[in-house]
Image (cartoon, rainbow, N blue to C red; front, side, top):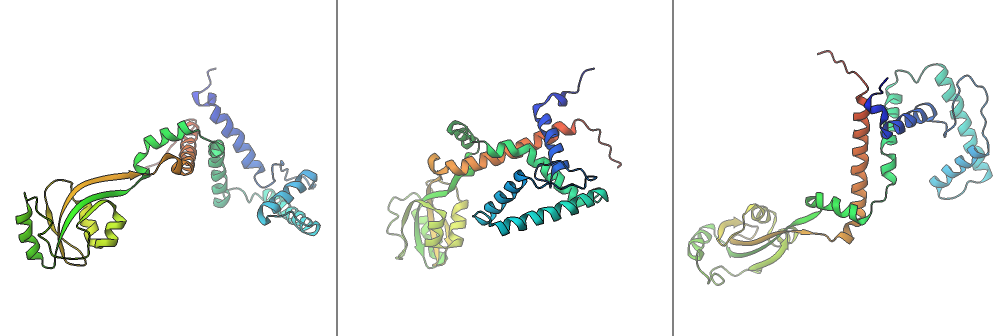
Length: 269
């Protein structure tokens, strides 16, 4: 008999193993649970695991009394867990269902969470997602200031096609020219309204306006706009984290798609 395609996928084998581990041993630290057993064996390995969990939480090893308390809590949890299984409380429980679904997702993405991509992998990820790592747009522009909108409109007609624009505007303590200025810098100098309208303009040799700021009115010439980028070395850790997250999400979806192929879905409409 020919086995379905999905049964030959290594990822499916991994998920099946993960399902068995998480579904049946989820709250036992890796030890199989037999609800009919009346023996709870807290061996040296179990005690060492409890001590390690305490150390991870508290940042130090437990005292003898603290370890005894951890063991007592473990025994209490184990007794209640086994009794819950005997009563079937794990069945048709939305919380338990969600927990197992979450653990299956974790099983699918576990390998990716530990992966360490090399620089070539990160560079390829950066190339494919360059827009995510661009800084805010930088703008180079000239501006002339006027207290009155009508004066700004009149000046716009005079300055078009003229090279002697510097002496046309009114005096103010704002830079007539800004080069490769970030949106933050422009907003700090001219205000939110001005920076927002400037960001919507297209570059060119023509003057435009009037644009309003907190000071009055401006006509502007947006000469250049560029998107800055942070260097690879500065981005390496962020790229590594983002790449790993993308891999986890991709593996979860691929695992689900493979497993879903084994089911016939019937939905009443």
